Image (cartoon, rainbow, N blue to C red):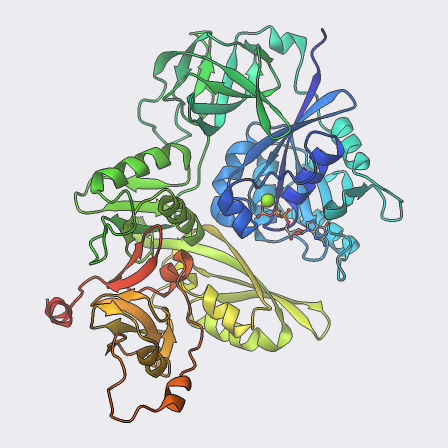
Length: 610
Ligand SMILES: Nc1nc2c(ncn2[C@@H]2O[C@H](COP(=O)(O)OP(=O)(O)OP(=O)(O)O)[C@@H](O)[C@H]2O)c(=O)[nH]1
Ligand SMILES: [Mg+2]
């Protein structure tokens, strides 16, 4: 039997521009998956409507196998995308026809161009009311040129699409009922990945992702560059050499291993295979300590492939054993050893994440942004863990005696009336306006800023309030720059419980006048727990458990007059945003609580004095 031809692509874009919807539609149209199946299969992904992990799928079209990697668009997960790009032959660069290129569009395109890939541009969502495919196209071309695209790269094919309806066309005026124009472009534009010559070489692959199977353990996801992989093969595993100027631990070292089972993708399922040849993407079991970027070969003499670069973390915080008065009540895993084991496992698959295990009191965790950390915590609590974390801080470093900190590019789309307050607030937080344009004459604007990540921490919820939920803010780290000096943030004070017990409606009704509450009636509270914030910025000791004083004459009318505003319930992300330096966020399977590090007023006073 003649092996099938293969094409390997990744689908890349800014967050929400429609990658997953388009991938799902491609799988459906070619019969690879049924109605209702989605690449966003993880529970957190389904709940949040965003892609968190890069995932593989495959489909058959006109006798050719097309492997597709759907990638996350959120900037915090940028390193997921980078790794994938090394192992595919081209990308579908999806751009929302209404929004145009956004920060993450630039980032993923830049990485693709640097790797010499020749993208196919998909102008998507052309059905949106304010879609402007021509303008978007011009902006995309400008972006290619600005990023130094070569001549061949800048002559990219364009496909217009409505991913949601499963429609693609080569010209806007074309009639189309399906995605075949896009599929045909993939076949004609992307070089075949497989060949007889490649298949006959010694085995060579490099994992770009890791998976896990309850029975088989760790799985390597890899493009087979050369040769053919089979079950029960003995292989050599080589650690990568560092990038230029970098030295990696154990670089160039070789160890041996034995592959047990191999799988390829069929739709979104993995299917066991007797052999997988060069050009295809495979899941490989049997190498328990395999890591991203290592080279696997059956030819001891072949040199390791270059390492896969991963961006540096930008924020850090401490993870501690939960020692709140409610510790151990809601979680299954609460000890330091259990936290350590979880984090050890996590850093193996979560590539943008780093953990310093050297302290006995806490684990120092660094990541690519607040969402990156929030997802980690969310996964931990769902797995039954309890943990406490400190306020996230940006990572600074010194180069040639100059203090540097991470900077971000921010793009805001907002109704025009809110531009003043946004510019003012971001200005105070160290952000400089770099560009501004009308997106709809007299109605909405797009504003570009640059400033320190530090200034952005805690700003997003303010932004939602300031724009009445109508603004869109996106950002991405552009690198480490000279420290921006002191910045002004609005300080909110904490409302601290001085009692332990259950919060009562009557007490909350009284307290809600003084600030925003994080809890509702019936919530268990302890001394030192933060139950809300105070608008004026001062700290306030309160007693949320206090009932109404008894009086001889009970007045029914007065009891019924209690009307409580719905609380601003803390999620992990909200908690990370509102917390201050002297607080911990307590995360358990059932609750997210904010607390003072020192629970009693006495201890706090003592601590402040030192
Ligand atoms: N109007 C319109 N909406 C679309 C189209 N395609 C997708 N959407 C919507 O856009 C939103 C985001 O779609 P996704 O496919 O999840 O976007 P994504 O690029 O995968 O997002 P991330 O993976 O989080 O970066 C969803 O609400 C889709 O229903 C389209 O062609 N037209
Ligand atoms: Mg997605």
